[in-house]
Amino acid sequence: MNDNKWLNRPDGLDDLERSLPSINQALDRRINADPENLERGLAQLVLTIVELLRQLMERQAVRRMDDGSLSDDQIERLGQTFMKLAERMTQLREEFGLTEEDLNLNLGPLGNLL
Image 1 (tube, helix red, strand yellow):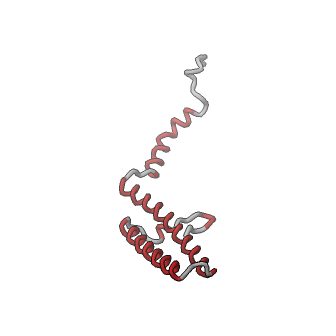
Image 2: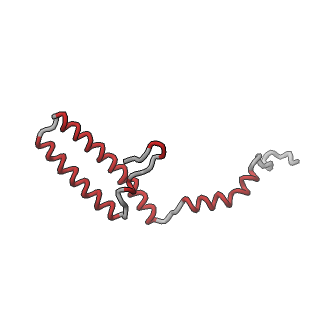
Image 3: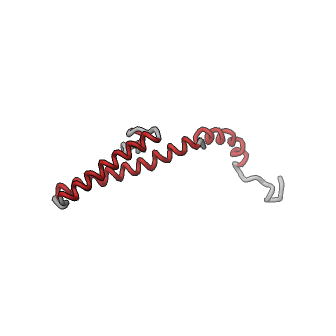
């Protein structure tokens, strides 16, 4: 046995070294650095967040409308704004080749996001 502690290998290092090829293969399958896929994935994430916020804001506007706390002018402006946002979201989804279902993430036991 070597008395120099700097030359001794920690327990399990040999096992880790033997498993590196399989770890590298798994990472290669999971990490795809293709710029087109990265751009689409980022667009999917951003559009999902925007869609979630849009739905939350729309629900809040409906609650306020039902409570009578919005004027007719405010209701009209909110309606126009939500319609324009929905149109723009459709354009962006098409631009990145995404569907509405692509923005609805599955959260496992919590169900779908949207």
